[in-house]
Length: 325
Ligand SMILES: [Zn+2]
Image 1 (cartoon, rainbow, N blue to C red):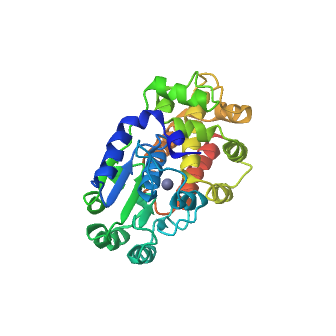
Image 2 (image 1 turned 45 degrees about the vertical axis):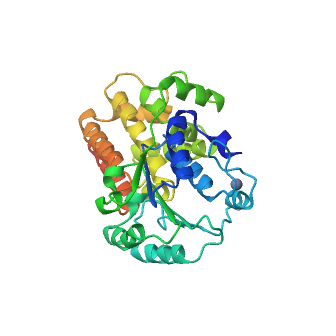
Image 3 (image 1 turned 90 degrees about the vertical axis):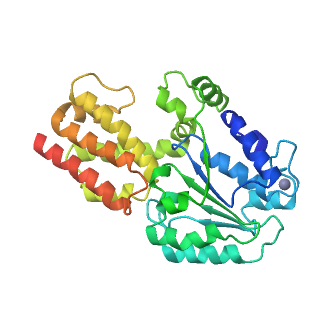
C-alpha cells in the first residue's frame, strides 16, 4: 500500500493544506488531529507522519514509500518514532509514561527529519500527565513533531490544545462515503446519514474480527437479559475488548431493544434472542438505561476506568431486568 493510494478522497482539500505546510516548513511542532470516530483522522495523521519522515517526497507531498525511512516506517522499526498510548485501552496515560516519552524525544534523531511523537488518544492525558508534556510542546527539540489524536477535542486539556496546531478532519459528503465504501466492497445502501459521516467505522464494523466480537457481545447480552449471566463477569470479558467498539455496539443495541420493548417491531439488525428479550422489558426502565448508555457514549474516552463504566452500565441493565420479571 502506498501513502497516495491509502489517501481518503474526502481529505484531498485538507491534504493540499498539509502538504504545503510541510513543504514550506510551516507545520506546527504540536499537531492535534480531531474528528469523530471513523471519519479518517488517524489515516490523515499517518499520512502526515509518513510525509514528515520520508526522505524523498512525491510531487503531491506524499511519502515516497521507497526510501529507507519509508521502509522502516512500514516495518514498524523507524528509529525516530515514539508512541505514547494508555497501558490499557480506556485508561489514562500516566505521568511516568509522559516523562519517558519526553526523554526519548530529546535523544538525537537517527535521520535529519527529526524525532516524531505520537499520542493517542490525547484526551487520555491526565491533568498531571498533560502538565508534564507542556514543556516539550513549548520547547520541542529541533525538528521534533508531536502528533496527537482525539475523537473529542473538547475533552483535551486546554493547556495542550492551545499549544498545538489544530487539524479538524472533515466528514465526507454522503455520495463520497458511498463511493468509498463500495470501492472497499461494502454495500452502502440503507446506511443512515450518521454512518455515512463516519465510513471507517462502518468498515471496521463489517470486518471479520468485528463480527466475532459482536457475536460474543450479543450472546452475553442475551444471557444477561434472561438473568442467566452475572453483570460483573460479562463486564470483565467486555473490558478486554476495544472500548470504543463495544460502546458503539451497546449504543445501537440499546436503541433497538427500546424499540422492541415499545412493541414497534424488531430492528432487522437485532438478533432474535435479543428481540424476544427486549419485547419483555419494561419500556420506562429501559428508557432510563438507554439515556445512561447515550450519556456514556458521549463521554467515551474521558473515563478513567472502563471496567467500572462497563460494569455500572450492565448492573443497571440487570436491575431493570430484575424489576421487569
Ligand atoms: Zn520515502
